[in-house]
Amino acid sequence: MSENLTNITVVVCTLNRADQLAPALESLTRLETADHFSFEIVVVDNGSTDHTHSAVESVSPGQATTIRYAYEGRPGVAAARNRGIAEAAGEWIAFFDDDQRADPAWLVELLAIAEEKASRCVGGSVQLLLPKGCDRQLATACRPLLGESPQLEAPCRYGRKMAPGTGNLMVHRSVFDEVGCFDEALAVRGEDSELFERIDAARIESWYSPRAIVLHVIPAERLHDDYLIKIARLGGWSPAKQDLMRRGRLGVLVLWLARVARALAVFFPRRLWSLVRGDRESALAMRCRIAATAGYSRCLLSLLGPKRFQVEGFRA
Image 1 (cartoon, rainbow, N blue to C red):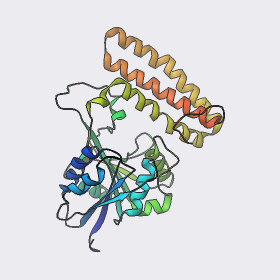
Image 2: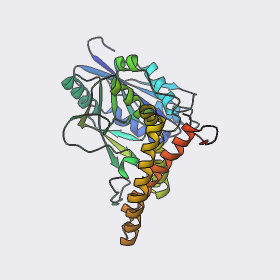
Image 3: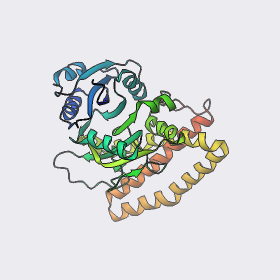
Image 4: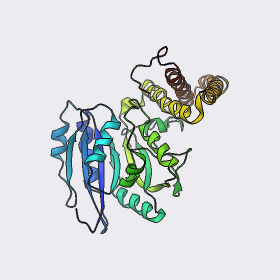
């Protein structure tokens, strides 16, 4: 890479999704570039047993792009992303998922907001690409479970009410030097939000650009109720750990009681009323909110009493 250009590494972590990975990489090879930056793609294989390696080799890089393959045997996406950071040659590191499609101007817009706001951490819009012919109107509460970000019209600062996700994120290398990399102890979910907690605590401004767009491909099986409920339950785990760290044992118990009270007083009645009205999507949304409360509760119990309450697949 030329020393006169801003260098960006796009890290794509993958596990047994070879058929989805190839079109994701192809969308990256079609990215627009400005005169003042270049980029490379680093694919981190997190222990795949399918034809991931050959899928990477099948994609022809763009004229200004190289594609490199790295294997990371330690399980967990946090370990894979950390390997990507270690492999990256760029001063900026962008994260992209193996089941996404990049808008051609994605990197151009991320770098533009970074330069405009003098920010070392920037993200953009993640929009859902539902199966062809699907006209389902998912409830607002369910769409983030599939990876959709808030759809805002103007740039804004990230904060506690809105945090970036690693499906559309670009971070300057100096940020990792300052706050550390992804927490590999978070084996289930939440490693991206936990990283942002540290970035925010370090008073590093982070900005959102609505013009930096990626599409998240949603296969039909992810629209099943059981899948959405499972994701909602898992999504409650990371906030429990973060709340315990911020508020302490007494504070988090008060917050937990408030969450349970809200589920009993608000979500359950709304779900019943939605079922009575025959509003399937609203009923599912309330069921997912209840599942998130259950996941939060299970995680909190495992944190407060790890010997008595053990949650399979979760490490605090």
